[in-house]
Amino acid sequence: SNEKCTIDASECYSFTYYGIDVKFEVSITGSESQTMTGEHLKKGLLLGGGCIKEGMCMWKPSLDPLNMKDTRSIAVMKKLVAVSGPKVFSLKESPQYKAACWVLYEDPMRTTVSDKSPNLVQRYVVRLFLALIEGDSTVSDDVNEFGKRHECLWWKDDDGVECSKNEIRKFWLRAKGLQGSIPTEISQLSQLVDINFWGNELSGTIPEQLYSLSMLERLALNRNRLTGALSSGVGNLQKLVRLSLATNMMDGMIPEELFDIQSLRTISLYDNRFTGTISANIGNLTDLRQLILGRNYL
Image (tube, rainbow, N blue to C red; front, side, top):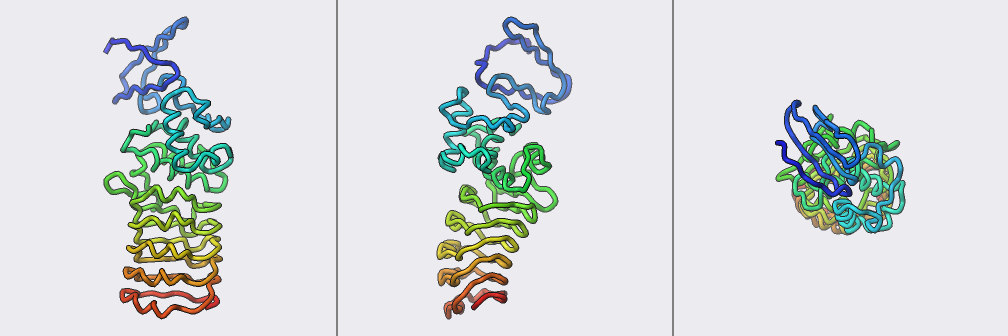
C-alpha cells in the first residue's frame, strides 16, 4: 500500500513479503528517498539501528544488557543470562558468547523472547553446539544452513535436529569436530529423546544437567575424550534404552543406579578406565540384549 508509518530508529522492524515485484520506499529526514526492490535478505526489508548486521560479531560487541538500547536485544540477553549465567557472555571467545551474538545480530530469523516457533532458546542451544566446532566461523556451512530455516527443519547429511510439536527431540552432530566440554545448556532441550555426538573431541565430564533429560531414550557419546566418573545421576534417565560411552577415558566405578533403569537394552562402556566389580543388580535388567564392557579394569 501507499500508507506511511513512523518507526523508532533504535529498534528493528521487519517488513516481509512474497514475490519479487514488491517495492519499499524509505524516506529518511535530511536524506533522499531510497527504493529497494527484489528479494532483499530473501525475506523482506529490515529497518532500524537494532537490525541484523552481517559480520557484526567479528567486532565482538558487548552483550551486557545495560549497554543496549533496543528492547529486543535487552529482552533476549536477559533470557540468555537466565539460561547460561552472566559470566560466560563477558568471555568473548566462549561458545556462549558466539551463540548469543549470532542470535542477537546475525540470525535472519530475528527470534524474540515471546516467539514459540521458531524458539529463541532452542536456536541458541543448537548454535552453541555449532560454536564448539574447530575453527568456528559465522560463515561456516553448518551455521549458514541453520540460519536459513526454522531449527526444526535443520537436517543435513543425516545430522541436525528433528522435532515433534516444534520441540527438539533428536539432536545428532556426529564426527563434526566438536571440542570442549558438553554445554550444560543441553538441559534446556527438555524433550530430547535421542542424542548422538559420536566421533568428536568432547572432553571433561558429562554434565549433571544432562541427567535431567528424563525423556531421553538413546545417548551416544562414544569415541570422544570424556573423563571422570559416570554419575549416579544416570539413574534419572528411566526411559533410556541405549547407552553408548565406548572409547573415552572415563573412570571410577559403574554406579549402581545404572542397573535400576529397567528399559535398558544396550550398555556399551568398552575401552574406558572403569574399575571395580559388576553389581549383581545387573540381573534386574531383564530387557538387556548387549553388554559391552571390554578393555576396562573391571
